[in-house]
Length: 146
Image (cartoon, rainbow, N blue to C red):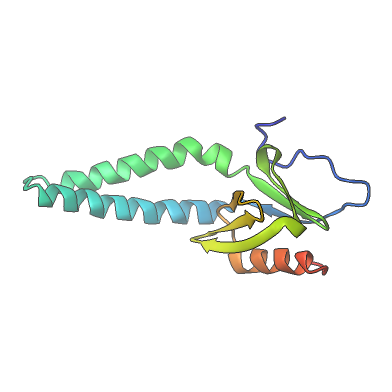
């Protein structure tokens, strides 16, 4: 199924899953708490800059916007999982990246971005241990084990 949040790509005959990389619930909520704090501050700053006497409503609006988004997408985002095999990185919604095609691995908050030689970008979000995940991908890419 294309919309699945776990890998559905069939494994090759000589391919094995070495590591499953799920989204982490506490990281998800922590990231959204930071986003809410930033949205609240920005909302208040905008209202203050406009001379609005009810600056506090910017905090309410910022919190409400991020809270609605967080609760709305949590069911999908927290089901997302990537599988690292000895040949590929398999992801949600049919994504598959050959390890030999990975050009760069970037850090973005609690996520890592995989950039391929062709310029495709894939985001592994809400990682419990981003440095360990990045290191595991690099070790397997170099021919080792995670």
